[in-house]
Length: 394
Length: 182
Image (tube, rainbow over all chains, first blue to last red; front, side, top):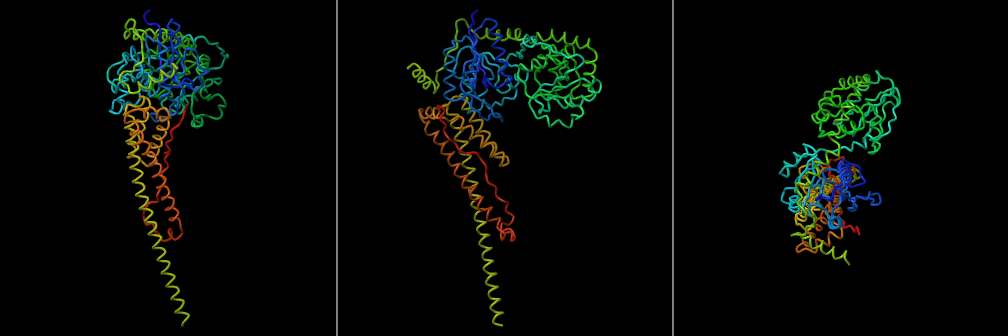
């Protein structure tokens, strides 16, 4: 095996849950289980909480970026950490996530040279990157040899703003983690689950809440669990007070709680009305052995194989959704058939399979005996980095 | 008769004084409005200078690319906001200040100063920031004085301010401070 040591960079704070962060963690663990030596570089608030495969990339600083406050890592100190990580890591491949993010990712593109691979996650990352003022950032991005996009939307953004092409490798699911859960189902009760930001209309909670009265009148021991950030008070018009606690808003839940909640639910409903590029959570529900009901967005339709691995209803149609839920709760046989089909389908999204595509990209950009090293060429700050090396040697 | 003459003379004098007073107040209000206009123009020009100097600093290549991208994004947003309402504008400018404060720490400053020409570019940006701070303070000072005057009874009853809209203070977080994260 010519590739042995792999470095992965996460631009966002390790202690804040998020899509990119869990992607990086899953990728790192999967690569580790395949015998690679993996080190992750990420900014972190409290270095004591880091697992041993994560290298402390410095304290993140809160700064407004892209219209929201993000916790990023930049500046002299952060650059020094990045350089130290590259020097000590002796990596065969460095895999940078969200390379446009002005944090450890962009710093790594800039401070490293050699076999670099990058993954684009978001589709809305604004890129004024190519305008004149971004000369430094631009040259840094040019060093990336292999580009990956997690979704078609992310790939399009990349093609349009940066140029060039990217390989499409979707998000993975650690299927085993979702399967290994204790099941605590109570006879005679049915649990329906909604996951996602409740204050974001495109997640479609309203569509589901409009369908719920029919469902509750058909099943008097049926419950709806709504998990995700947002203010439940906004939906009080849709929630009948007589339901009592049959509709539970549980707020933000951790990854572990998510796995447990998915496992305990009888039905996972994805009533999204748009803007979903992949729908990783559908795959997670299938992995947890929960039947899925989803709107017929193209992405969902593809994941559910046009209804084979989950039930599909027309986008925004609460009545059809209500009927679909009632049908599945009544017809246990159909529900179990969907769960079985889902169990097979989800293996296509298992990290163990997805990681093979990632490794193929690594192998494509790596030449025998090559290492990722510090890039000090023609960089003004190179001199400064040289100074910091001398300092650390003293 | 003499008393009657005396009373009317007093009344005429009082009325004359009152009219004179109104005229002077109207004049003061007018002068304050003119001061506000000038202060506003001066604040706007310093804000533009600040975002310009920030862009120059960002593209100098003296800083790491992450810091450069952060401040130039913020400076771009501030420049584009000139077409927007003043609240949106003030928010964009405040965010530029936050970005500068996040990026400029003692080590970064030392690094920029060690480059040829770095000192000048940095000083231009910091000087523009200080002027923004000063000119906004002077503007708000004039606005407060003016609203105080316009709230006086005589000014309200006799419409001394005419149709000039009530001036508003500009609320921008504009204090650029070099932090020491060591």
